[in-house]
Length: 355
Image (cartoon, rainbow, N blue to C red):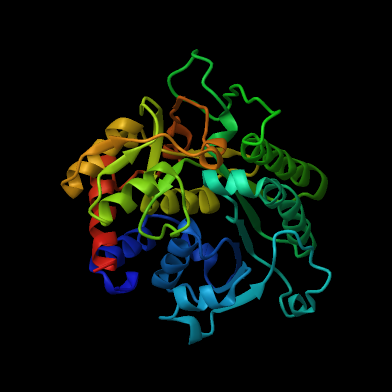
């Protein structure tokens, strides 16, 4: 198997984001704390920070130093990445090593359960990461006088489309049945956003909120059970694409390149207290058409199969969840990929990485 940084297309995408028209100088010589740094979004972001050559320090908070060291082997010993072993249920009373950092300039909470099996098998961890861990991090940010805190929220906070709009803008509020196991993810993200607003008002903390939509990319974890991740897994195994519903769901998707460029746009240019959808209509597609697109790329066909009870318990019930990205575009953000070119790019990189 090839490492991602050995694949030219992946390196091109990293450099593409690092050269995006943003005030990168704000990050020069700064200390940046990232949770979820080995995940889909976070690991691509760390590669971007390396490519941007900002001489910043990056604190990676996570449960496995070995996983982080393996993922970032190319520059682990360069001295700018510092790993902090941390479980999302912990506070920071034991972290005397923080004393050497007078200030955390930027903090990004990207850690979260983000796929159906995780929601179904670890519902407590799903909620606590988005609420208790977030509260601990916000308190740390206030104590360390952080310049800015970014909370990675989700399109899930909108709930189900009431049938009154085609696109969800940042003020929309749809229906969520809160008395279900599956509600733990969207409801905790909603609570997390409210916590950010509370810290803005009570602690004068500068916070921004990035509402990520269904992101895919070559940095996806092998344990991810989202439909699009499973489609790519089928394709790379030279199997037919398995669709576990009629596929009528109409969603916004985003290639990781555009999710991270959007994330950094929010961090560096967003207004304190504002939430921003990271989405573009050119990547909206029905689940059935998405399965067909990936199947065509792999030279396979789409087959239908019902999910088991555990997996089904974690599925979203929303049938239409398309986001309005106008607020983010007003900051100067534009996507690099639509759904067709993003799928092609992702398939290409993943195939090379597994060759």
